[in-house]
Image (tube, rainbow, N blue to C red):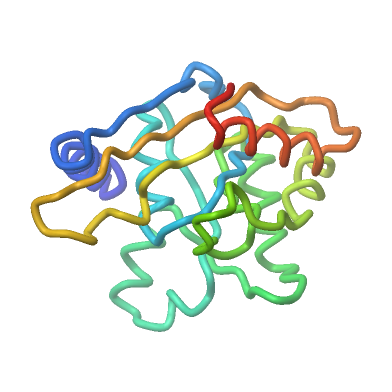
Length: 192
């Protein structure tokens, strides 16, 4: 219940203040396990992407440091987050992600592993954790690219136009990392 109340409030905020534009949402399956692999520019990215999807809850990995402050940890867990230790293989996070996918839920992963603050790059280096999960659970990957999320809250009364672009599902598992990278770069440079 908390998830959907927060979803409505945040969706209204994004629509009114950020001129929220969603492209390609029809590419997201309405049921069954699926991995959304997105670029990562800002802390708002999970919210911005999750608010696009009105027909199912979005689960996502968040760095373990965000769970240290208990009230904030409660809020982000309620919004679908679970912790991941960065910099090494986190077997607990992988098992949690695997369970989410096997239960037919939607999982958001930021393939870059951290925020890419280099605005001259369309995409940072992708890590292969999502490839492992897609192969292990046999679910499709949907590439997702966000624009201008790093500008939200930068200037008072001057809000950016936030765009979220969903690509076509990637179902073939051969060379999955490169296919996902190519799809994200194409989305980030204006293609589909």
